[in-house]
Length: 325
Length: 204
Image (cartoon, rainbow over all chains, first blue to last red; front, top):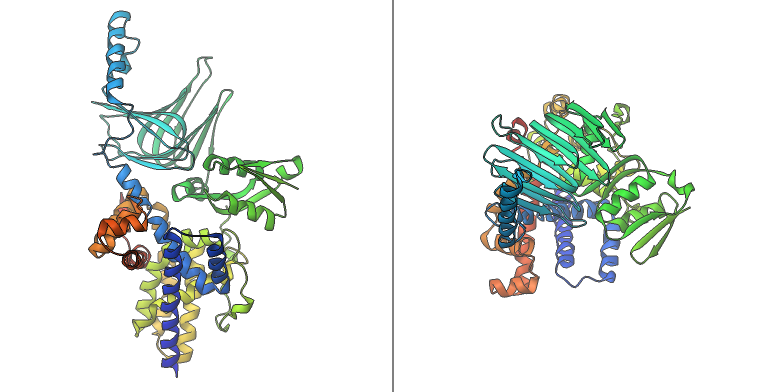
């Protein structure tokens, strides 16, 4: 009896997995309509066994997307460098000007600067020849120069995670606006918004300094858990728990993780990753706070939560989602 | 973020099978939580179940059952921390089995406290960073049957449609389906069911 029962449940488990696989593949095969989605939703709603089986397979399927990143970050393949010929002309011009005028543009002579960028919602991994890794988040642009004994990364905009192989003889410097981060063997996160620069240190040590033309300067030696924020008018260092820091790194797994986060901030985060923009319409709604884990590129799912769970009014206007009381 | 030790509670393991008609909707965020927090424990969970069971043929079944119970319970409130919660549920499930059919070695169940202590350290899944992820994917990929691997790469890396894959490989779309199915099935098991090369990633 027991044996029968077990055999039966085993068959059920295998059958559920088979069904979940069929759904996953059918969705991937191309012709996937709203009707198909509704059917899948209905199947998932039937029981937890269906859901966990599907979620598990789907998670692996999504993880396999990373294979794509591997190919793109392959150092053997040319990255999206500005076209070489033009770059070379600029380089030669720069050298001539340098020769005539002086050494103002000396750094221009750096043999290669490689530019890496991501669009909205995209992410990208860059491996440097020294084994260091840089992961670019959405809407980010950086320039990487490695000459003999200098390694320099310039962040023009956006957010990047650094995992740096330390070398005493080849210092690694990240430059973002007026900010400068000297790596002392670390993993850290740098985020550059309009006029705000944030450096979060995950592991190791780093020196962070800001030098403004207006003579406002700040400098700090960062340790794991330190979060330094520089704006035109302030410089501060606070300490965050590691779980909180890991929540900030959720994007590396495609997730936004909120904990008692004001709705306006939540909207701002989603808007970094999506062309469809969330707008918080009124003051009353601004005070709502949100906790939970969301898929960064699924703003529609968040809108459903706002409506169904937070009880807010959600209005779709083309590329805009307006949230109000 | 609070650690909330007191919130660990395992659902009543004697509960009967869920009636599909009364199944509740999954709470928002639950899927992401399950994928990020629970799935990475699968390798350790399987190891624990294998150690505890004489008959290892139904491990898949037990893993599935643990997941169902974990999600049911977490749907009301996400438990913190996750590991002890998941393993408490697994233990309750095994205790059930012991009562019912004597297939579990009791020592192994008692061992759970030690196991819990050992696995509640900062998890490898938190420190597995991108490059380990790629290494792991690559390793899993290398072990796929060649045709399944080819189909998966054409789909995921080249971004070809099924029809294009069929044309490229000289097979029908139905066969593409078969290859991809086998690829996902193996990949899922290799990514979640087997212990990864995690030690090296933590020691770096």
